[in-house]
Length: 266
Ligand code: PGA
Image (cartoon, rainbow, N blue to C red; front, side, top):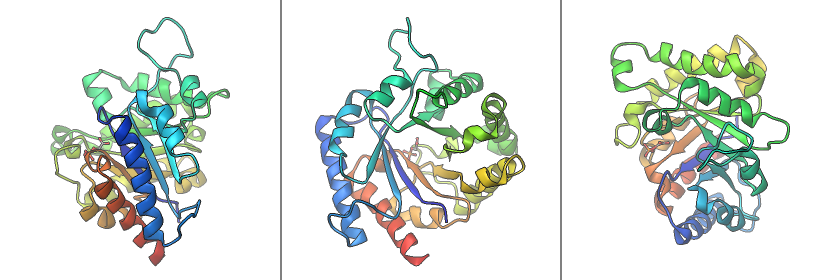
C-alpha cells in the first residue's frame, strides 16, 4: 500500500501564533489517535504548506514532530532580478521539503501557464535542489460539464511529462483538485474522484509501471473529517490536499484520525 499523505494548504491564512498552535496541536492529536506518545513515526505523512513568512518557523516548530513543511509556490529561476520571487534553493536551505506546483489559484489568478508549471516542476528536479514537487491538476466546472475532464488532465500532465519525462515523477506527488470543488463545500464523490485518479495512474503506467504504481495521487477539494475516509479508501486515492479544513486543529486532526483508522484496517 502506498503511504497516505494528509497535506494542509493554508493559502494566504495564518499567523505566527497559528503556525505554532496548529503544528503542536495536530501532532499531539495524531499521536493520541495512533496511541503511541513520544513516537517519531506515524504510519502516514502529514505535510503543511504555510505562507512564506512562516516557513522557517514552521520548520523549527515541527522539529522532532512527524510533520513536514512545504511552500505554496516557488520561482522557476535559480536567482536574479525577479522582485518578489523565492527560489527553490532558498526554500531548500530553510528546510522546506515540498513545494506546491501549479495550484489552480496560481493558474487562474496569477496566470501560470502549463509551460511555466512544467518549468517550475523541472526546476525542483535539479541536482542542487532538495524540494519535491507536489503537482496540482484539475478541471473547471465548464470543462467537466462539456465532457473534457480527461483531456484537460492529460494536457496538464503532458506539459510536465514533455519537459521532465516520466522519471521526473519518481519522487513527486500529484494532487487532483477539481477546480469546482475547491473552497466551494462541494466535493467530488469518491467514485468521481477515483475515476480521475485511475485515469492519471493508467496514463503514467503506460510510460513506467513502477513509477506509476508507487506515485502518490492526492485528492483536493472540500475534504473534511466527514468525507475523508470515503475518499481515501478509494484504490487510487492516496490522501488529500486540504485547504479550509487545514486551518483548524480539530478539522485537520479529524482528517488525520480518519487516516489512522484506514491504516489500522489494512
Ligand atoms: P479546500 O481547498 O479544501 O478549501 O477546498 C483545497 C485546495 O485548494 O488545495
